[in-house]
Every structure is written in C-alpha cells, then in structure tokens.
Length: 124
View (spheres, rainbow, N blue to C red):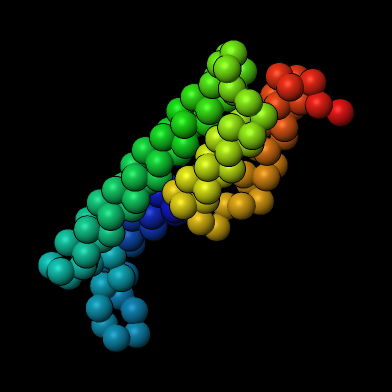
C-alpha cells in the first residue's frame, strides 16, 4: 500500500515537473532538490529493509510453530505437561517476535495447538 502510494506520488511529481507548474512560492512542484531524492531513496530502502525483516521474522515464526506442532503430534514419550510447556514457550517466543500481535496469535495458533493436544492426549 505504501509502495503504491509512493509510486503514485513519484509519477505525479514527474508529470507536474514536465509541465513546469509552480506553486505560490515560485518553486516548480515537480522539480526536486538534490537532497530530496536522496531522502526518498533512503526512506524506500528503509521500508524495504523493514519489510524484509518482518518477512524473516514471520517465516521464523511459521517454522517454529510447525516444529512445535510436529513434536506434540509425533513424540511418543511426550507428556501432557511437556506439551503444555512447549505451547506456552512457543507463545512466549511468538509474542517476543511480534509484541503487539497477541490477538492474531490467539486467533491463528491457539486453536491449532488446542485441537492438536486434544487429539493427542484425548482431552475433553
């Protein structure tokens, strides 16, 4: 969304610069100052870095949760208490990676883990 807005903003600026329209200060609206292009490039690079970092954390979370669910479902020697500890530690790790996403965790992963533990240990 942000990238699309920035691209649209860039296209509008290029179009305005081609018409050499000026605002009330007499400065062409489409004309960029030397430092302005560098600032926008650094912001775009920063946004790309943030998106890449979030994608890495998300992939790490998915792999971690997949491993936890595999251990809970496949380890024959796992006790109910150990499985509950695994689930609690996975939740703690997920919230440390994404601190403000507790609701998302509760919607996505909690029901999966509960269903898996119910099936594995024949609860309820």
